[in-house]
Image (cartoon, rainbow, N blue to C red):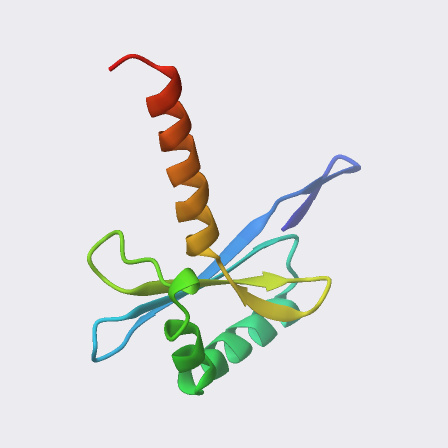
Length: 112
């Protein structure tokens, strides 16, 4: 949102999240944040619902790196890349591998 007051323009960031859980209790969260205008918000919501309804969602769940099961539920998180104008899944596999590397380093370098 942009707010004008006494000749000053103040810009506020917005965050839109759409969360969906299917019959198999798999969760899809779609996020976008930034300086969003109303037309872009409408477009984002429409596109996010299309992602949920299509087989694209199923493709994401078939790739283990994109599935977060740390909370006991399979979940994917999609973020909108403004540069490519594509919804991209969060790569939880890369995050897990990085955390494993940190844990291994800590075990090797600190006394327990």
